[in-house]
Length: 468
Image (tube, one colour):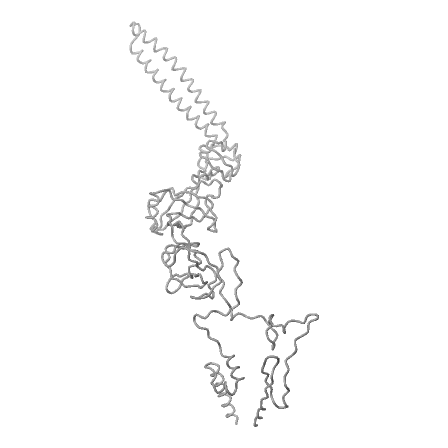
């Protein structure tokens, strides 16, 4: 008996599953309408391929494709470099008696940077001046003797040899005076070296030596490093594949370069390409480019890393859509185009150029077509959509069937605001009368069938008791 009961139970279960899956037989609909209705409600609904979602149109954001001039750019990472960098060092040895600048001060060419103790070099200069004065006096005396010896030689009261010897002495003293002048100039130069001046316009860094120290011309550190930051240079590398386009663009006009902040959006400064390197780096396959920036606001600083955007060309009057609208599939890129009836159509396109913001459409759509930019989760070809503009607030997403529904009391039904019977009773309002039912005799089960104006109880025969 137990095996028979198990077989009957399994047969009933398989029959229930088959009727739910493949439909209810007509005999069951005729003789067991209640069970047929229960099975029909339990059967899953399979919407067709073009059946619209019962939850309504899919909310999306759209934007119109437009004709625009799109610049052709190439991004890279650059290093900021001072246009000129000078390490200020002394040219002579001495005691650093004075520092005439502050750390980080802007100086002009010729401004005094530091001074050395000039006492020793001033004494050497004075010594050369005195030596020249001594030789000058001897020259004057030799010239007087030469005139006297020449007169005596002409009147034959003196020898001609003596006159020639005196003439050579005068020439010797004249040469000595020129040596003395050179020594004076040398001593004067050493004396001038005690005053150290700025060789270029620029900004001083942090001083490398303090006042009162003895410094030497052979010291590697120097006194201070002076850098020229207005203007300033940026060095960056470009792939060798871009070399032809860059050469062609440079032959027509100066190439503009933007220095961007770390967000790759904020422009720090705009400059122009100054020079291309004379060879390609074989290790990386890139060419080095140097650009000059005015740097009036000191946004660029030597040693800084910046994002560089080089403007190579401009594409004239091309169809442009936001990059967010372009999707990728097995057959290539595509966009969803929304027609006048708010139906989305999957359209294959070709991309001529793309960056993080805009995409140039080569073929597929024309200017003015409305393309979807947001809301691709449930979007398919032929879906009805509720389109909004780029400045509109994104409509709340409709809760899909697989999402969790709000909790409700167990064993009860979901509250419906449109059902007046589920609303709380208000003051002075009466509840609607409950539908009347007929009481079945003991041992019989009742099944309420709703009808207009109440409910009708259908009496069913009692089930036979199971045989133990």
